[in-house]
Length: 126
Image (cartoon, rainbow, N blue to C red; front, side, top):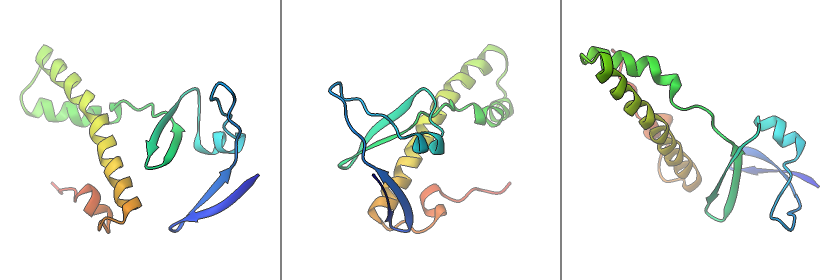
C-alpha cells in the first residue's frame, strides 16, 4: 500500500514494508531508484523516526582544491603541506554533516531560522 502525504509543504510518499524475523526490510524499488541507493545505506534515529538514506560517498574531496590553495597561500609545502591537507580534508565531512543536522533541526522544529543565510551564514565576497 502506498500513500502520499505532506510534511509542511513537502510531499512525502509512504509505503508499508514488512520486517523479517532477522529485522530486515526491503526498500521498495521505486524509492531505491528515486533516491539513488547503491550497496550501502545510512540509518539514524531522528526523534521517534528511523531515517534510512543512501550512504554518502563524498569524503570532502570536492573541497580539495580550495583546501590546497588555502594551505599553499599560508606558505605550506612538501610533507608539511601533505599532512595539513590530510588533516583539513578529514574535518570537512563532519563540519558539513553538523551544518546539515542543524538545518534539519531548524526545519523540523521551526526554531526561528527563516532563511538559508540564517542557517549557513553569509558567504563573504572577495
